Length: 486
Ligand SMILES: Cc1cc2nc3c(=O)[nH]c(=O)nc-3n(C[C@H](O)[C@H](O)[C@H](O)COP(=O)(O)OP(=O)(O)OC[C@H]3O[C@@H](n4cnc5c(N)ncnc54)[C@H](O)[C@@H]3O)c2cc1C
Image 1 (cartoon, rainbow, N blue to C red):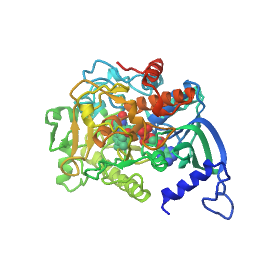
Image 2: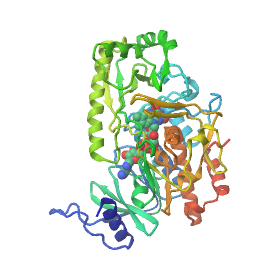
Image 3: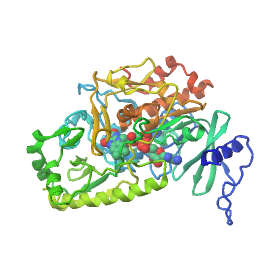
Image 4: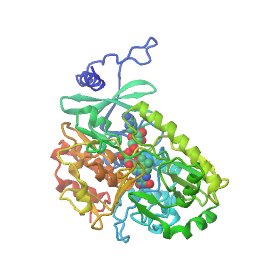
């Protein structure tokens, strides 16, 4: 019996309301029966940017929400993974902030606490965007520690019940209908029953085990985007670093999908000396809120399967090896970074791509490029198509600007096939691989999460399933929560 079938059997037993069988016997009884611990209207699995916004949005409409995460904080990649800044929330003209709602509220709270620079003040081609001058206007540098607190407070204020150290194990199913999940917590196995569930795991784990069709990465090439372990450094002489980079800006270029951007001339020196074996040819280094702190997005690990424990473990070890190499590079080759200190690496490997859950509609990248605003639009965004490592050699990437100044994301992308009572949010929504390369970034992920939360609450209020929700009801409910839809 494979894992999925075995766990599915457990799920059916739970649905029948019986005391669940031992999943694993243990002489001290620590992992024994599955305890009936939680009952909610809505269970949100995954407290990343999408799941947190989904939970807050639903709770603000009065739903009783349980938000669970396997880690120790909210924010997912943006906090545990140290990923940042928030990518653009503006249209391509650079004049209009189009991702608003909960995203804007999070930004405003961060700014008020000194934990972010408002995106209106951040222009591309500067140290805040690793001097990248296309598709990165109005990013939002933020402090991950302050972001954790902001999310904690917003959930508490909305009445969301949050559980950390709670890992999703298997869905509780009754036929096609999901009725909650079994969680592994420090107390053992615990059942969390709910009328509706949102899968915000990034990896589509809930949908997969509930029986929704999924594809892994790009089915044509069989590849996923490379993973990256982020890290933060301080003790940087920021003015000397800026003086080092700015004279080289005219040399920034892209050849066969490979970026020769920030510090590529120093990488070339290190390579010539046999002191560089990373696949990137430049170093993406982003100034953070504090003047001497920078975020480094440069490690690159290919072929990581985030749904496989051994693959992830190997990636974490390789990521840390690459961080060590990069710290040596900074100390030896980069003016202003001679005594830079490693503040910390992400508590988790940064996973850009794993499963895409499929619904009846799979968002094609061409719709984003063409600027399609669908009839059931829930989000406006303008992030360019950014597929790392997709072209040419392993260091290559696919970068496509969009033809209009924004595009939409249809509500249909949140509906997985074959499962009732389940909505998708964030990175795993029903989109093809390159489309996901655009809408996976945090501002759209948060907006998608907010829409999923509002939709779930409306379904609960009306006793209907997500596929029966009328967009004529959803749109005003989103506008009520200050979502911008044009
Ligand atoms: C290397 C890298 C660089 C990036 N750079 C940027 C950037 O500069 N700017 C930007 O805006 N975006 C960036 N992104 C994209 C962005 O960070 C993610 O795509 C975004 O965080 C996705 O949000 P999410 O809520 O779908 O998933 P995640 O942020 O991955 O959150 C998922 C949450 O679910 C939890 N979870 C997963 N499985 C389980 C389980 N079984 N049980 C319980 N909890 C579970 C996890 O602990 C996590 O907290 C980057 C991503 C990566 C990987």
